[in-house]
Amino acid sequence: MVLDNAITQQLKQYLDLLEGDLTFKLDAGSDANSDKLAGFVREVASMSPRITVEEASLARTPSFTVTRTGENTGVTFAGVPLGHEFTSFVLAILQVSGRPPKVEEETLNQMKQLEGDFTFETYVSLSCQNCPEVVQALNMLSAVNPGVTNTMIDGAAFKDEVEARDVMAVPAVYLNGEFLGGGRMTIEDILEKLGQGTDASELDAKDPFDVLVVGGGPAGASAAVYASRKGIRTGVVAERFGGQVQDTMSIENFISVKKTEGPKLVASLEEHVRDYSVDIMKSQRVKAVDKKDLFEVTLENGAVLKSKSVILSTGARWRNVGVPGEEAFKNNGVAYCPHCDGPLFEGKDVSVIGGGNSGVEAAIDLAGIVNHVYLLEFMPELKADEVLQKKLHSLPNVTVITNAQTTEITGDKKVNGISYKDRVTEEDRHIPLQGVFVQIGLVPNTEFLDDSIETTRMGEIVVDQHGATNVPGLFAAGDCTNTPYKQIIISMGSGATASLGAFDYLIRSEEPVVSV
Image (tube, rainbow, N blue to C red; front, side, top):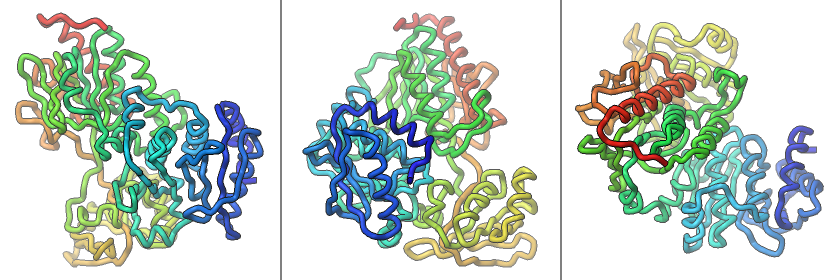
């Protein structure tokens, strides 16, 4: 038995929703990975009379394809789709069987209209919470467009292939044999890369909004819901929905929910926003915000959105350490997500830069996977919670180095070491290793703003108790502001505050609001 009872019961419910017959084409050898994959495939097939299994010769062993019986549908799993990829498997069998994917009509049409032959290969780790979104997007594209195929490849099961392609960060997507991109990508992002994204003229033609929310994280989602509930014309423009929460593995301090994962919370946020009349424009990056008669929000594709008020909720991103080698070796040994990329460094030596909670948690996590972890902290003492420090110091394969000023990340084609200066002795030292995980806090996503908007020296937008900035009609919320605590629940509250502040501004202005 490959599946436990809980997954089996859950899967049986999904199998009842199949709309057509499926054939799993299986290529398995005699190794342990093949035995596990074959056991998974046959166990799933035994749960439904609508699924049959055929032996086949595929590009990789072990692997299996999910096809509509009698057709060649392009969804393949090279590795057992459990862990975070179990949902990818469930969605694949439902969509291949004929159930329509849950995307907007415009996006679905763009997917179907894509012309040409597209062979995608997506390298993942089963512990990666960022990978499923990419796998699911490409599987969905494969299910609705006969010219597209996608293979999910478990890096742990195909180590030689991962080494040959120097895959050191997941998800990593190849198209027709060439690297297409890494990191989290939505279906909108992928269509944009393939030249099938939303045309700028379509965005230009939109009527002005009453409230335009820039950013789709917890603050932006909360702001959009509160604005739309007022019955006014509301829009959200975001590079990706969910922001930093998408990259959060475990959330245990969101009141009323004992424990959840970032992607699950983000899915709930987007579902909630879509319950209202909110115009969501994803995969769009904002270039500038200017106040004229109306606010004009210029996007990087040249489109201009207009609104009577704007709420900035652009969040924050991982801070770079800013030393030679960091940029050069990103995704080639320099990483920022231990949950996503940690398994790719199994048995190797790595470093974690940062002694706060994030850094210490990363070191603890990595210690169970890699050969040895070197944790470098700039200050004389770690800043993490005492309980985390106690756990860290109990691990035999972790070395903590304080008073360490990182000076360079070295390498050839990929990372081969890290250099630092001992701030007490002034000695320069070097550690040979294969990976560096940067965990030194966040920086606000506000570099696109001009000097007319007041910010702190750290780039955080200064707001008052109503979420208002120094520019009338311009509000801000969440981690991009000068709020002292960067927490999901606080961001949601500040989003609601900014939205109510914006509505208060609108009803006191001369311009009437637009009912929707």
